[in-house]
Image (cartoon, rainbow, N blue to C red):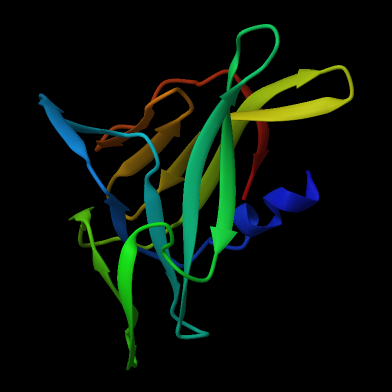
Length: 161
C-alpha cells in the first residue's frame, strides 16, 4: 500500500459526516442515488479523537487514457468556503452544497485500481456503512453512488480494511 493511502485505512469505524462540493448534481435510479461533482469532499469524523478530517477527491488521466482517483486528506474543507467553529461535534461550518445520511459508521473500505509497471493507481473506493454502500469512481467528474446493495466488482482490489 502506498504511503499516501495510509489515511484510507485509518477511517474504519469512523463516521461519514457528509459529502460536500461547490456544486453537486444528484440523480436517482431505483434505490440508488448518484452524485457527480468535479471536486467533492467527504467529511470523516473520528469519534474517539473528536476530530474531523476531509478527503478531497480529484482525478487525472494516465498516458494510456485510464482515469485515476486522487485522494488528498486535509484538516480543513478547502477550497470550499467555511468558517471555523469550536464545538464538541463540529469544527467547521461549510458553505456549499451538501448531503448527509444517518447510520453512517464506516465498517469496511475496499480500494480498487490497477498496477502499471511498478506503479499502483486508484480508480474506485467503496465504503461499506451500516446499511448501505458508497462507491467513489474516478473521472473528469467524480461519481459517488449510494446504494443498499453491494456494488459490482470494480476491477482489481488493491487492498481492503
